[in-house]
Image (cartoon, rainbow, N blue to C red; front, side, top):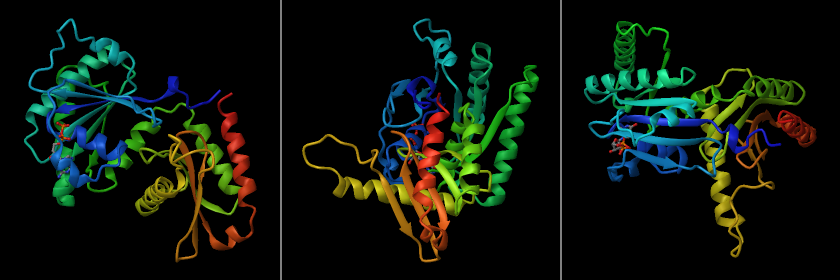
Length: 315
Ligand code: GDP
């Protein structure tokens, strides 16, 4: 069986005040919209926006707070939704006054916790692109303190909130999403282990497992991740998908630009080689290696090994 079948899809709720940036995050992360285009997104009046994300490893739903979301409305079955949720992301607009957002956060978290104490509470301090580094840290400290003080006042200090500084104008939103998703994957330690074994037995220096549609990385080996490497992976995925869309689809098939045959090699001008290969319907392996190792040609065989190992995780 497929370890990444729909029953184990990480389920994420994206919540926050209206205009905090939820739709923009969804469009940029899951639909390849460019950040500037989000300026023209229409506001919707729906409380709940479903995103099936059939093409992605992650499934999620957006909830707005247009003024009052009524937790007491009997027709709104929030309990059922919280029960099926792995992570609740609460988006706070850092460029706006956040008093209202914090009280909403508190109300939501306490409600959700009562229904499902296993939910991961993730707070995105969003739109930080306009802020200086000092200012970012200061905002984070202030929001962190106020949110935790509110919980302590309610005697709920056992609820843990994680905080991330995010913006759709750089890779921080993808990085934050990756961390949120990784926490929801029970096989993560196994996958990390496999990637460690994989790189230690090949000339590969760094390996990532990516959700192709969202460019969220699901796992990587235990060597540190630097932002530039991550950005290169994202760029490579974009290039592969774009080229496949242009040249890879034949007219009559309703095919996708990503399938079992998907594979790409890019030689960078600093003697590094990047290698991308399909692993499952949603996931790709992206690796970095030196040109010398690449020329030793052992690579493809080793990759096959990890794929079969990868599948064995599922059994
Ligand atoms: P929603 O009501 O929560 O879905 O909010 P929207 O996604 O409609 O976003 C509201 C506005 O915030 C839009 O004009 C976006 O362009 C803007 N926005 C979203 N994310 C960011 C961000 O990271 N930085 C900046 N500067 N603006 C953002």
